[in-house]
Image (cartoon, rainbow, N blue to C red):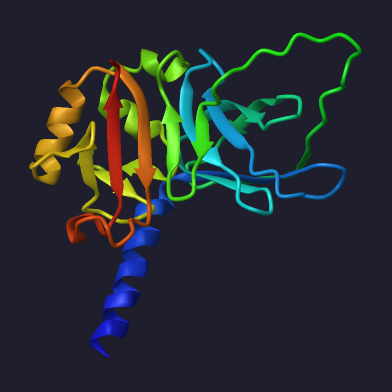
Length: 227
């Protein structure tokens, strides 16, 4: 019974925390099907094109941006082998608005007889056990601090005390170049705010395997600094 009340209280608290924020959802498709695209989604401020938040679509192409403030945004959708899709003038007029963009069809890149192929590193990469956010040489590197970069990363949020939350879980273990930071949540926020955004990449491990210390059970974020 105690567990039931605890669960209900947690759900009510979660709903209260998110009631003041808007959300943007949609589904990326190709040829009227989702085809396991898993594109990267970039939400930008329409006024200055600065990055607000990064996201990745799931196996069926669905994506979600939660805890969005009122404003006007643009959406950039990137996936290998397809043209970049840009949606302009997305307006969030109410603080609790739930905006569904519906199905967004992506177009394949036309293959030309003569083409120059340029290799580039995507801003978000999926690995077997983690997401990589490539900060170096991206527009994220212009952020004011490491904390700001984290707040824009997929599945990562900052609560009212600017503490790092990963997929709704607090107590995330933060590491620098593979070395844990022995700091409390509030101390981490202060430290990350003072840390410049000279970051090569951020590795986000939402479900750490047994090889990691139990203290990272809520998730691990490893900040790899520029060499």
